[in-house]
Image 1 (cartoon, one colour):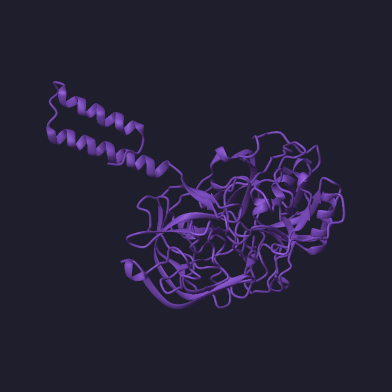
Image 2: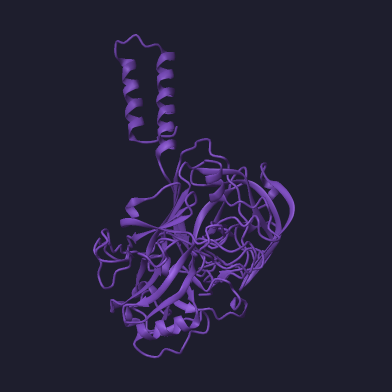
Length: 517
């Protein structure tokens, strides 16, 4: 028996007591009343309760640089109930990536998949993928009665790896939400994408793409509509949004969450501020972001107008530039001149040394207590991008990457989580600004599919006491403009939910960046 909440137990107990009372209720009448109580409770719980999905973060998962083409998605069963939302916990594995538990097939098989707002598709390892490159769970179509082969080849390439195989579809579920005939890529080979940690512990099993489907792009598979867009398109969730909370970079294990169809107000401070998604000029790999309302939606991209630091550095962009929000990329990437000047200003000295693996600038670990901040300004209106922009402010402590200890306070060597593209495959990437996990952890993010906008608010980080008032070291979202304009608020923004290392900068032939930690 499923107890949907404490009220059901009380109702059933009361009905049982009626049997002992001198009431003229027959056995069949009592049975009917109990079934009615169960049905009513189930209806209320499925129609009202939001669904959350836990995210896991992987210890020895290679950090994710922006990736090349979208990964393929899977499908869940159509939930028998509509107007639902679901929340699932995320897992933070030693600050290297976030995963969510996904069930695929009939009977369902569990997979820990990277959540990626920077790519539109989903893929997972198939049974023919060698154990050396696809350790852990692999999907065997012959073990699922609901699997359907598509007989269409699948290929995805990243700056540091990729996967090849075929498309297929099956039932896919997260928490209590499911989609039938969900299309995904079934990899039979993979290179540079192995993600394991602690030797034999959890292993990442593919990628859950969450960006706009690229079905009209060159060489794209027309049926490749991802899980969250299927939830919205099929009205499985009544509110076509999903929200992410990553939590602090220093919170490992189960620490974040993703919510489909709703917003968890317990995870953020202040009012959620919205900004429009910036479209692209075309569906080709060379397309650039644009302010034109007739563009194509490809990624969760905001119109950036400036980058600055509390230490005095500031650069105003000549024209609004796309800032891609990518939960699948570990670090944040900006043009090299911006990265160099920004880190020099924050560190208070010329910084030239980078660590050889992640290419992060090496900075003093004691910056964690400096109270310094970095701010990304974004347009709150595409029609008037310079009017009342929003400011995404991140405390430097959340941007520090301790390279030889668990926290900056314990470490002797720290990297700066904002860097520049150094991989040769990324030199021609159309997106010059990718806001990865180092920035996104400071914010509770709401991705609104129906209105093509993104909501930002202060995340209630576990490592820092929630505050509704701005401080010199707080993260936040601040509506800007004349002081005379009412409603100027500073919303401290901190990392919410998860997104793992799998940035995607274009479908088809775009290079996404996957950081290696």
